[in-house]
Image 1: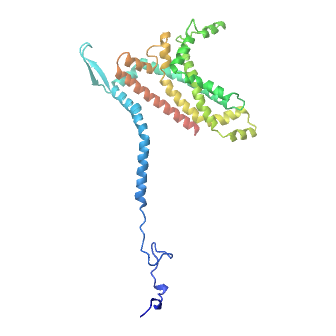
Image 2: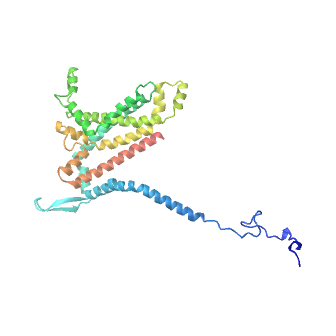
Length: 338
């Protein structure tokens, strides 16, 4: 009987060459190639799970975006394409008919609308640079090393924005009203009798209210941008012999340019939406009509004349004008930065 140990050894040259998962450290009697889990299938499952999580997190924003933005805009555009007609002498039942672009033609040829747009554009050309200039100056003063009580002044500058716009307009209306205004008394004492509610001054009076209310808000945005600037830049400039004014003009102002662009866009949008301040001052002066601004014209057409279709057309045209001006300002700012 032959023993296993007496069998002749197998030459190494006759062994099969290693291939695939068969390595030099693999046992000869072990099974062949092992099956690895498919990474493509698990990766697709992980991606689907991430997409579902993102959809769940974005769903509340999407619902609110549709409810307060997309649907109202679509409804306004839809209303602007129709008009209400009455049969007979105007005493018949109202009938809504498709008007196409007739309402937009009425808006663009309405002299009251065009005057209102020109009025708010003049208002913005004067008020916005003054407001942003004051906001930038206050932010630079708060960011300087010689400023004291920074927290107190930061809150004091921001406090007017915390007051609702209607309340601020009422407060300033009493300061403008002849007979009870302390500003008129001060003006008479120095020989300057100014009627703040007259036709020539009323636009500047409204601009003063808006500037007083929004300067602190814009200042806080610019000041926050200044806080993110590395302090090493200031130290290097001081070592080079730069004064405080040169550091502010050549370092701080260029670095806060994105913040200035952002506040500029907000100011353009707010200018074209001017409504609260003139509405509050209107009962106190004859210089402000019911169609003084484009938004007031839309309000009067909708709630005064029940012409909702024309009011919707005014709102759509005003929204397009706001988008065009904001986009143009952003392009100019980007081109200047490049």
